[in-house]
Amino acid sequence: MSSVCEICSSSEELSEYKVEPKDETVVVCSTCKSGLEDVNSVKDVHWNCLNDSMWSESSAVKVVTFRVLSELGRQDLLDMMYLEEDEKSWAESGVQVIEDIVIHKDSNGVTLSAGDTVTIIKDLEVKGAGFTAKRGTAVRNISLTSNPEQIEGLVNGVKIVLLTCFLKKS
Image (spheres, rainbow, N blue to C red):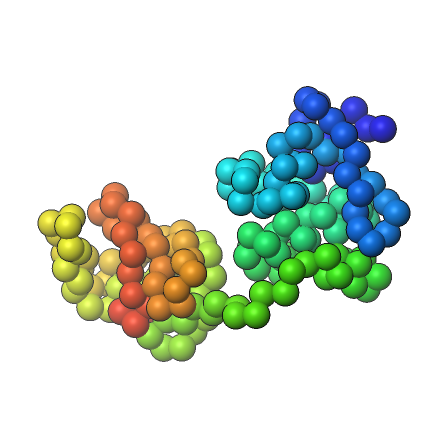
């Protein structure tokens, strides 16, 4: 058994985790194990380790990483990930199918992704914050929401929700 978690490299409270349906295991810490059982039980910041584990030489580690990224909806990282055909079918066999995939599009119909930069195309009064988000303001590193008509971003140092119909991708 490895002396560190194969997902996050922690060395505390290690155990083996079986990667169904094959008979292979990965060594995981208690935090990763609880996250594998319920991805929302672990803080998002913990899953930053997936940026490294997605490049593992172990098929089982890549399969686990693929499954967690899928549940988190991190399409940006999934697009970068490389899996052999047999690894991909193994990984997809354990992913819960999301029936309604949420696609965010700007005012011009261009698909938006987490981390994109968008520009506001109309002056928008920000309710409750007491300022107006001016036309032409760049909103960097946006976050996607479960609503395809909304994104989150920082404007004037305040995190606000913006309607995609008032944005264009930069």
